[in-house]
Length: 218
Length: 167
Image (cartoon, rainbow over all chains, first blue to last red; front, side, top):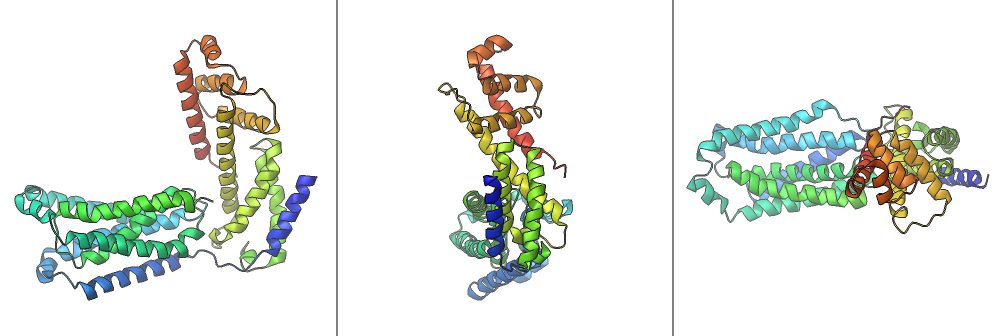
């Protein structure tokens, strides 16, 4: 009886505390992240410029497939984030398609570049002093985008799997920043992409997953 | 719920009052009766804090069932941890209310794992026999009893998370 009265009081308190609240709307996250992507690409193009060899890169497709990998991975991770943001887990199978396409392009490039994957030119390219820009732009830009979207979206979610959601948040902003930076970067070696693009994306994913353990529990 | 999201207090009161009965029935089927009211309150608090995650384009039932299930799993996790820490060598043989809740929940969960593991866990965790006693009774070595208990508890947790909601 006593306990029951406590529930009555709780209901009374919750009702008095009720305020009008806007539900999470998927299109708003898309808009927010698209704006982040455009700002990111704008900053990279204004401050660093389009890659110097862009006429050749357009001809051989590098201008398309390199940012394309990260753009597809970003779209795929966004779709999965939206699936995991609410208590009911509704993962649609087709939401893996963009990630699968990104993986396919990566694999295709690995096969194409395999004959000269470990040649001295490629290895020399790995010691690129400009790689520091790649790392800092992806980690810095991705970090800012993650902080913004965390406040705007992630802190309001109730995911059945918070750790995966946090890791996807990091992966998604990493891919977003990588898409922007890929417009400037003229290094198309698959090893270079794995090391200098993959590492910061991995770091952001780990940070996202660690943060989620504390901040996304509900 | 749609009206509540817009700030309609009357609709919200009606919703919470009706939900309270539904939640009590939901948890009564799953946990010891002493824990039911706590879980109902906990779920109502969660509903209030996370109401923005309700998508007005979908129905409310599956959403609240998912929230209640999440709270139930959290409760089971805490209960299983409690059983694991309380029933070690220094266990004091006191039948507390919380202990009774934990035993009730573990009994229900034992049905979800293979019988040999369930038997060992029942002997160690519920009948409170020592590892050596269980080892003699079942014919397994003491270390294998420990491993079976550990694996069984892990399976129980995994099984809980995989359980499909029947609502």
